[in-house]
Length: 198
Image (cartoon, rainbow, N blue to C red; front, top):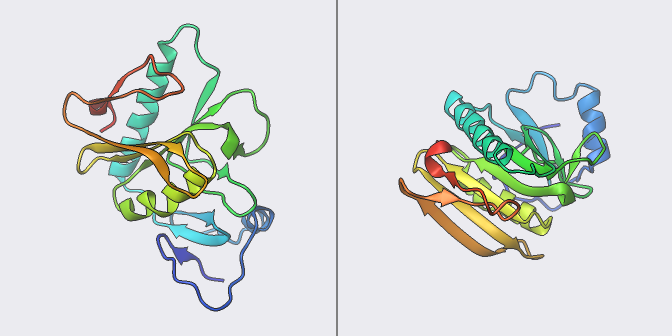
């Protein structure tokens, strides 16, 4: 079995698509042991994601810290959890691992489900094209209300809102510049300066 590189969309005449249960069983059996980086299940295909760089990890940590700090300042605090580098199950054939996502707290289960998510964030350094196409369509079709693509190299954030069933977003805003802030709809009273994200 070979893993497909992120962003690779060429299809042959026939292919085998995995479901989440098969993907999980392969993981438990150690099929992915020794793989550098991690693997995701995207549209039934096993995608190999490159190892994250120190820059990527640092921005990831900054995003988590900024969101958590903003939420803790609210009174009463909303029943939300900020998750990083974990599986978000989307239907039968998708299990991405967003860099950061926010879910409603109180839900039980081993994996977060797409319908729990109120925000998904991808830190985009080397996979911008994939994050704005493949991942963007996936999160929109899943009904995730808001998706951020954080691009530290160009110091901007793409904010996508109002997902459509066809995988598009009704609203896309590019935020950049020293004074720019982002306010998520699930907690519109908070404002996170972009300077806290990278």
